Amino acid sequence: MTARGRAVLALGVLCWIVAIVFGSPALYPVAAGLVLAVPLALAWVRITLRQPHVSRLWPGRNLFERDDVTVKLVLAREPGLPLPNVVAHEQVGRLRAAEVELRSRGHGRYAGSYELRDVPRGRHRFAPVRLSISDPFGLAEAGLALEEQQALMVYPRLVELERIFFDGGAGPEHGRRLLLRRPVGFDLHSVRDYQQGESLRRVHWPSTARRGSLMVKELEDSPRDEVAVLLDGDPGTVAGSSPNSSFDVAVRVAGSILLAQIRRGRRCVLVLNTAGRETQAVSSDGPGWQRALELLAAAEPDARGPASSLLKSAESTAVRSLELVVVTSSIERSLVDRLLERALTRRAVALVYVEPESFLGAERRREPDLLRLQAVGVPIAVVRQGDELATALGGANVAKAVARA
Image (cartoon, rainbow, N blue to C red; front, side):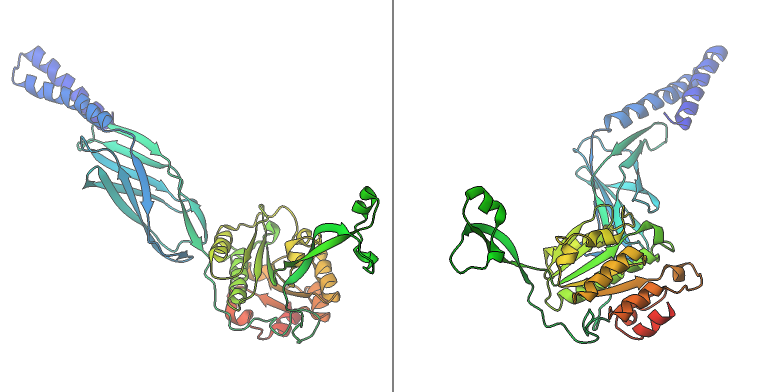
């Protein structure tokens, strides 16, 4: 019962008392109408409060950051006594709240819509929708919460890269493309008996010890990803606020490089240094690319360890790749050491440094470690707030930018 309902009920009782005290028969119908209106309104609201189903609809196209989107809210229930006034209260992730009046569309369906403007990148989960159901006169009201597991996926806005700063060779070759292009390697498949003349390097000693005779490793050709793009989600270096924080820019950088590589027909893998440490192999504009886009959309700077920890094991996806591109805002010593080690062993590596100071309006500081990497031939691009990504990643003035960093 609403405050208006209580007031109407009190007025009805007062009219009834006045009719009795002053002997006014004309007030009895008025008093009866006021008193009965409230329980009738309550009954109407409760009878219509059946368990409905709610769903949300928006345009089927992919949504990108800074887009506007209209969300249609649809309430379906069994046909019967029509619902009185229905207002839905929506909360979309960290976006604004919305109130929507749902109007009848016939056959037990009620619908309304609201608009979200300038939506940021992310996976925005819908909170349970709260329904406020009241009679047309506002005498009675009931609430109901319905949960529908849905999320609004907003992808990062990537840029087309005709040329990438490490196109001349991402490694210590100083401008010469590596000749090793075949994305293969060798993995242990099985063991078999040793045959005369075979190299003892292929002997599998554990099996030899168990069986008492020489056993050799049977190797099979296994694919290797050509390019690994490692996105660092170190929370300690995030500067600025969404959707223009340093991490948001890093996400666009990683996605744009990945897109440029797969359009050249290269096998790629996306590696995220976030809380989940997800990886996704991508070979074409297919399901793998769609999944990579979803990971980039939902990525948050919540890493529990440094990016260098993903480069320690020889079995790491990033380490096994033929070329490695690291996108980070943190120039930590352990990461630099890993990249130097890779470069000095003639394995291709490149670095994109998203400068956090530029997102805070702070003075640029020198990063000697960037110069160390550049000295051994590691291609480096520095991205600052307001930079055009196509220009910053295209190789224009890369050496000069590093010298100023």
